[in-house]
Image (cartoon, rainbow, N blue to C red):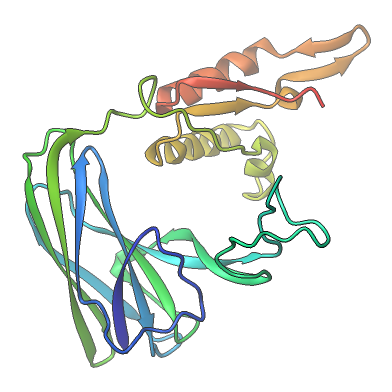
Length: 258
């Protein structure tokens, strides 16, 4: 087993190979109210054998959290203009030529252990820093174990006095489209049932945790066609606005007419 610490903004792929000199120590800067994040790239794992992760830390940060990264397909490259390349219109600045797979989705590691599906796996570690934390240094010793093998990594965070504002009106405007219909369908819930509303609230809290402060109001979810034209479901509209607002999102993105 081999392990390598990486900056969380560096792309990592299921075929990534650790070089001759793995990085075992990584230093990061973080403002109060932010999150120190790094990626652990692992090679040489035994598939389906448990990998255990532990963190021993000191300083003003909250306990570390681990996320197993799941790879997703990239079927087309971003275009030089617009959303995707078309025909011979190639983007010369892509990080990798599609099709390929890249680690992107985050799956929380329950009980600090998971079973890898392949010899290579990427794990993301988060150390949240409270808004009222004292500036200083956080030291974190990360340990990765599989079977009798064990590797230690050191992650250091320098916490500065600067403070990131809470998500809401004064945070950087950020939207991410979503489908309320899929929140019911993919979780096998009856649309607009109590369970569906509870699931929407879970998604809203996750959006706010990832610093999203703008939410979409899809017109198809609040308007219906009737004999006199379009009818607005005022009760559903108010409930959606209240749900996302209570989660911490502030701005509303209007739905699309067409």
